Length: 308
Ligand code: TXA
Ligand code: MG
Image 1 (cartoon, rainbow, N blue to C red):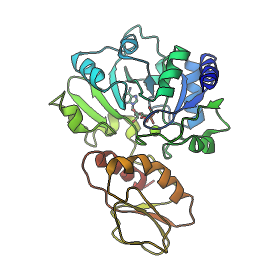
Image 2: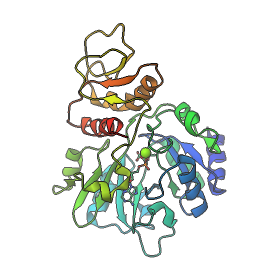
Image 3: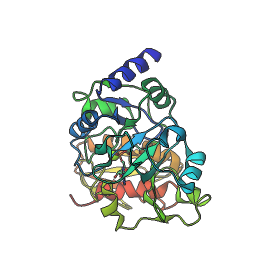
């Protein structure tokens, strides 16, 4: 694996694109100091230019070279980094990061991932790595190297294969302006953040304007999606949750037979992909409890079901 990491690091230094595993989902990485590399990321994803990217860093110490940290930001970083938390902060005036990663905003999203391969790659490349999820724009996030190969294989220099992602759902995005606010729910829950920032708010729909990544139709499979399904209709594939009714004749996947939300998050995107590739006409999704990780899972499912 060490040789693979060396090769990937060298490619990043040459401004080529490398997909790599994180604990949440696979990222489509490029040198965050280079406009060329960042532009190549947008092009490979087919991502609208106004949708800014997360910059991955080795540590809080490195991050402080790129953005302005206040007390709240340091507090969250010291408790949750490395890990699945992204902090949106004002760029330093002389920040060396490509302006393109901010897509015209004066803030930047930073995260230090916990996955050992991501950490090894960041250290070996000795660069900040801009990386959105490694899927084509608007599609389901990849949680295995094969997902990346299917969608982007012909557009990138290398895929670093770290097996399936342990968390399977993207990081929580928190903006630390005057009032700290959760822009995107993710695997760190609001309750966890509230322990350190009691006044944390969650973004309502108005945040859609502020966090352009929160487009209503996002994470979309090809097939239409029906939420809160209590039964399966003809022609539907079922995404089940919990110890449910037998679905012998139905194309189905179960997010978690035992009703475990962490297991469900890890399975979500892989199972959606599998059902999407079936010959069903629609995907029916059973209700998921709106608590803990269920909030992030329902956020992704609502986007998958949004009118396109
Ligand atoms: O878990 C994750 O966060 C994965 C892994 C690869 O780190 N990355 C990921 O990136 O999900 P992406 O690009 O698919 O989603 C980034 C989210 C988007 O909702 C985007 O709008 C928001 O972060 N974001 C990025 N930069 C921002 C900024 N400067 N201000 C506000 N929101 C920002
Ligand atoms: Mg994404």
